[in-house]
Length: 159
Picture 1 (cartoon, rainbow, N blue to C red):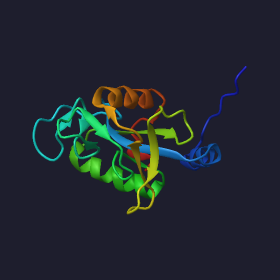
Picture 2 (picture 1 turned 135 degrees about the horizontal axis):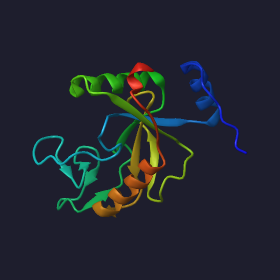
Picture 3 (picture 1 turned 30 degrees about the horizontal axis):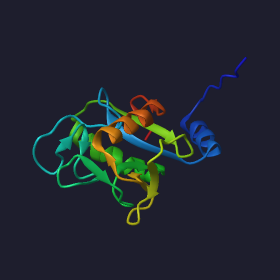
């Protein structure tokens, strides 16, 4: 039988996560997809099939995503960076609960994706594309990553 563990406080959970290995986390407004965004037709945060134009390096026709070490979906690897990201979401959420999704960096990330450390911000990582791929492929791979993610409901209380 599998042993179940009960965590009595956040420090217990932090200790277990640190023993498991490096994690990558991202806050998300409850009810929204962890890795894809709602359709947006205009502006800096315009989306193509749920992927924001500003997150990845797109081809001119926006049908292909090109590799780039410093562009990809944002993830935090430290509590400090996660707290910063959480506060950005909290401003936009207008009192909606924010859940924190996380995945171990050693998790089985689909071929063609890779976590890359942000050269400018400590504790920040990008889930990057390592080879050119069609947007449909990227969406499928991002969904695969979200299936492997765990969630802390209303994670803001923990942060």
